[in-house]
Amino acid sequence: MHPTIIIYTDGSCHTQQQIGAWSSIILVDDEKISLSGIETNTTHQRMELLAVINAIEYIQNHFKTTTNIQLNSDSQYVIGLLARAEKLAAKNYQTKKGNDIANEDLVKKWLYLNSIFTIECIKIKAHQPLSEATKYNIEVDKLSRKLVRDEISKLQ
Image 1 (cartoon, rainbow, N blue to C red):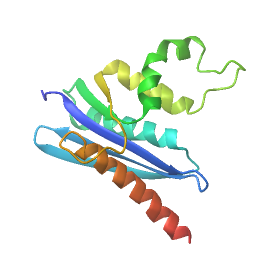
Image 2: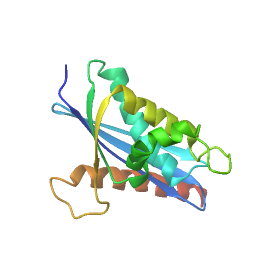
Image 3: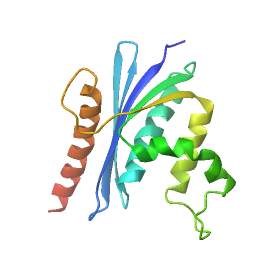
């Protein structure tokens, strides 16, 4: 059984082009695993959620005995969803007007994954100076932004 696995995640999106990217770094013992992806017709919040979900699903598939995860994210949206989980479920994931909440599919998946793992969420301030404590957060931020820039440059 592995000790707590540490994840750093970030997402980025070019709002006008609706092209986004997500990235995650997973630290297991002395191993560093980097994951990333690109999406179209997307939003920044979807990218933040996908970064977390894809990292946890990777752990679920590759480290089956792990139950403890430390999630480091600069996304208040992602971390804040946990505090709203009961309220969202009670309202059947709908707004006051009766519409489905934004990103309902990913919100449900994130909340489900949170229920089957013990996840300690640590909110990190974005865009901090490089230090031992911030280096992986900076790395996922740079990677997700670079992926978006590279995709946008293909359109020009």
